[in-house]
Image (cartoon, rainbow, N blue to C red):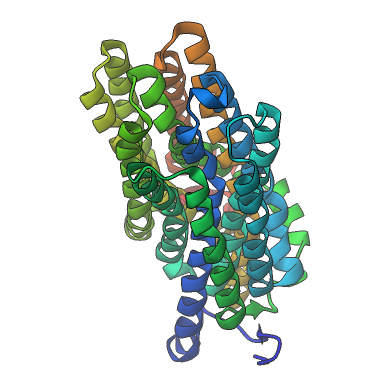
Length: 451
């Protein structure tokens, strides 16, 4: 490593001696400060899910306006994940973390300026779109951390990295709760985060590293985009992370619109689900490490579908206690699934490497290269699920005045996710199908159940 540039020339986490003597300490240090930056990025991305709770009748916005606003913020956060993934290979993980953390100042200061009654909806929409850049921090962080850890540790490391980032959602909701409870305004909330952004950028500059093995490998993204497993996993990630981020944006508004909760009453409840969903994500990664990501993901979709079916009943019966309880359970399940699906990604590409006849360091390098690149694409598509959830709630409330129709649509989608997981990663091919497949294809088919 060159001290001035913070570049690490040699990095081989699959070598157990290297990992024990050097690698683990460096990887954990980078993980800590990556989590910090990503955590604040998530808070800024979901900032408007909190700000809309402050926006009473004097702001002149309808519930449909608010759902549209949060949908567009979610959309930008999904789209920017693609270039943020490439940025790690172009600039280096440490360097890009400094830049991406610093960029969070733009939406935060802009919101501070315009956040007052009398501002037009169009202005709120444009400023809200800026907050979407906070969603990109996840993609670059996951791509960077994926390169630091050996395959046997990826489920835990990626789960911890993502969970620490995800927890930025309930943290900003808790801070908002305290401010609302103290009769403070939204500018107080924004003023708290501006110095925190600066701290995250400075700490990344001081304590993080770049890996030369990741730099200038932008071609990996093209290879990942051509692989059909990338898009299958993106579909599954819509069901897990798309649910998490979509519900995080929408939960408070649903409580206000459908159940007549005040901003303070809604704020008391909205943070619980995202908090538990964030904390459980590393557990999902750990379970996937131990039992296989595909198995955990499959049964998690069964549980999510069951919880959603109960939400349909709670919504129709207008039972607030049942609705809140099961919604929180759904958040927990989405977090668990986030961890298990992301563990599947490096396992899938490692399996493909072995099926190609690669071994040892060559197989590990192939798996790291493709899984790192695919994570950004998967994260981007998965986040689009949050857009769909908010638009579904918007249409459901416009059509029927309740969220029941949206929950029915979510239930169907979880069924499709279950079917895709089973068909692609767990269904054992018949003896006849194996006989027709090439040796490498058969090996690949038989191994995906272990990812």
